[in-house]
Length: 307
Ligand code: NCD
Image 1: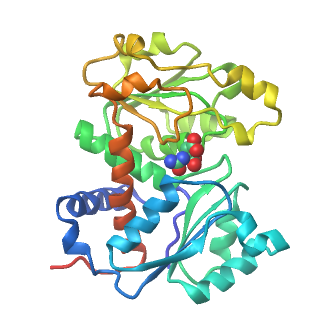
Image 2: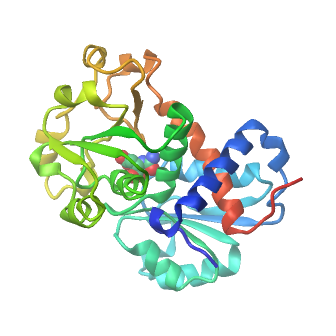
């Protein structure tokens, strides 16, 4: 039985296979409409979500399976003090696979260690979010035709943004990927990402405070919101929340073929006028999230590809 807790749980070959399957699903979703008939996905979400939970549910429904679950900690027995270990034992009796989101780092690992069914980490605190990374990789691959030989700018809250941590983890395995990490000093990437991931893999990166300076060099700009819920105090959040706002004027500094990604939700960091720019790829990115989650569910449940 396989779980997905971190993008590194998948080899580069397995990621290639998932992206290829997702691409195939995109071309002809109806071919896959019954591959999970009779299977159930549980979505156990202890933290707010729109895209991740609903795209998981949409993915399972599109494969012919069914879904059950809860969308907030207060509507589950967590509110009565039940542990994740006990909850997942029970969910294992009710479903074939589980996608879990929780505010504590490491919670998906605890679930996996106590589970009889595959557990997918749908976000554990400020740590990892591997299925957003699969979505991001599929988006980059379909826009650029490759995952190597790219200069990627990651901008915003690089400290608490779990999508950033997972994406860096995954991308360092491709050749000639360079990172420009754009954040205020308080929101730089955690030391373990800088040392154990970037430096340990001899990956070229620089850390900048200024978005304008980075823009002309980038092939991909990955914007993120400042993660209010992970701040210790509101004043710091207010001071930092609007540190970067991407506007049509700033987009003039970017290459004609630089694409903008964002895991969403957007707060203020991309002005709505930028949505009209053909380089704005964040809504398309959300659509790709369904195809790649369909592919992941198929692989973790080991259901065959229809002939
Ligand atoms: C992200 C998350 O939950 O980490 N959202 C998502 O899953 N698309 C990003 C965020 O909340 O800022």
